[in-house]
Image (cartoon, rainbow, N blue to C red):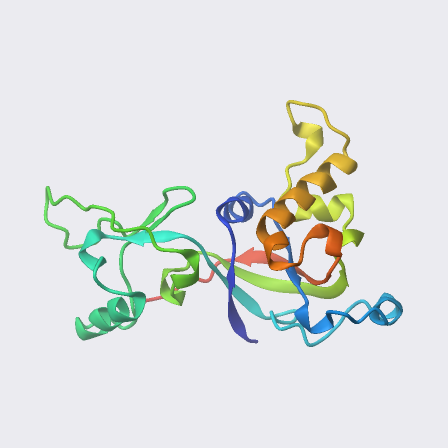
Length: 215
């Protein structure tokens, strides 16, 4: 079993927390320009060699966060070093998560009564260290396919809200896939991997597990 980091945007983190997201699609750059793979992968959809992992591997989620203002001058590596120097068994610090404002150990044991704990500067998801991550995922299935082959069920599993429960009625199939297309393009079109390019993608199915770091 291997463990790797994976980035998610705020809305997708929220979808995972709400139990609505159990799939993610990532561009398979290694397949770019391989039109011959349509026939090959159509026959053998469950591919090994995905750079994000295989069934049984774990992914720890990186998301936007803050530490307390005491650590504003330190990068995550330095924060970890300070924890170890102070006698902790593992890196640790109070964390606030940007997407929902949830806090972990914000007022830790030993905080003086009346001491004001203030949030520090915002930190991008790419800078989140393992010890600050609150979400661990276990990969259950991996396959490779063209982006535009996404189904209605898959779009829902990607975190798109079920239109049957929406206040405004939209087509349950076209509307859902259209929302996924809009989301995909907002993240990938500028990099040349938009919906119209129909790139090969790794489809990673997962389930959330409890896997917090111990200190």
